[in-house]
Image 1 (cartoon, rainbow, N blue to C red):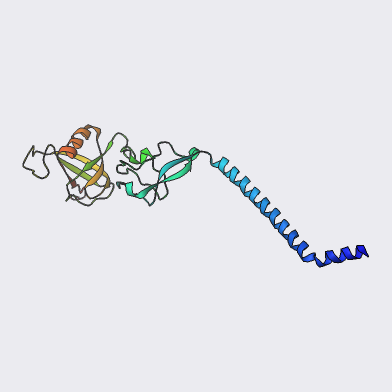
Image 2: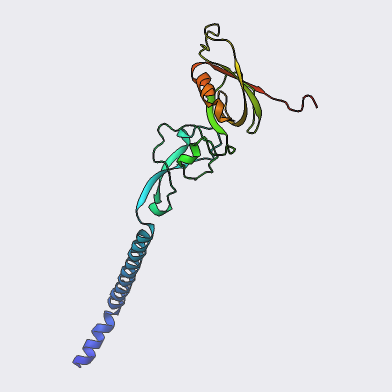
Length: 207
């Protein structure tokens, strides 16, 4: 009779046994999932390695643009960081080659030699506000007025020298041009201390 009584008690308590058995199974599954996720996280961290914060373009960046307001610092595995990658947006100049959205910025993106023909030099210059609208590849002639006050053109040397150039990039008052190395100093001087007036050359005008 005692055995029958015990079996009766177990039968009456069967809902509790099923409940706690289910709880135990769920807890075991949860522990296994957590352990698996932790293992995968450790594996991912090992594969990622040491991170480096470098500049990436938030939007496509065009040649000649100033990207300071359109870049952000992102975490990149050290073994994937290109040589010369930039880590600060302070003091960035004008791009000498285009950078796609998400691309990492490097020193070469600002190097005047990027995209310049062999044997020639690239240089960024300030041009007069009424300079013509041009596209990259346009052939121009730079009229150089050195040591002239732009706000008082009558002061200084008003004689101009002329230098042939090709446009690599152009904004409203800043151009990146390609010139012969022999002209680098005089172009830089006129851009810094005087006035540069670009004239578009039409090679087909007399044909």
